[in-house]
Length: 116
Image (cartoon, rainbow, N blue to C red):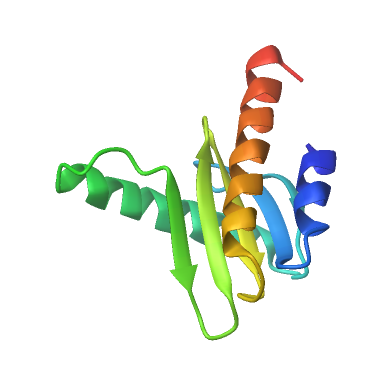
């Protein structure tokens, strides 16, 4: 899992990459913050709320979330029972970041289902 996350953070646009359970517990991460547990818990709560919202308005299951800020973006993507959270500088190719996140989620899903 660390290798998959490291490949994401090797992208120029990506600053942090963490993998959390839907309960907010950190599974793995490369994070430039001391508040790793808080970030994990808040990310899972935000993703859960957005998922509830999209289901409530009958718009289907949430697969990818992008939050744009003044400093960059926070992107979240479901990876089975896990959530991949990536922070970016907001500069560069955001489409590439999303594509690499999709690849990473597919790999993470495979790792989880095969038991590593």
